[in-house]
Length: 117
Image (cartoon, rainbow, N blue to C red; front, side, top):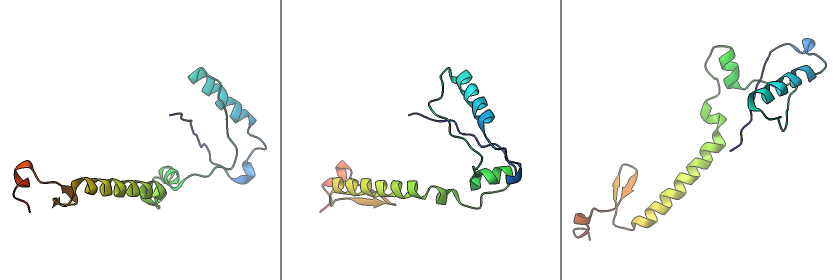
């Protein structure tokens, strides 16, 4: 899996923002090449990035106002759907002679199989 390095640095009011970001971009590209031994394939930068609620909470030394589960709601929905599908498959494999232990379904042990109708 490929990965990218990300950085947000700041912060200043709009009236103090310089006209361009070329010096910062060049410095980051040089540092990237020195560290990795490769030229970067791309470099996105600019004066306009905003901190996420989690990043702002770290800067302000406070707890996040938005729960992590809301930030990752799509991932959670996807995982729930995947779990439901695996549960369906698991129950198909068990057949009708099963026991419920909490929320986990298990089949009878070999000795119990004869006793079950």
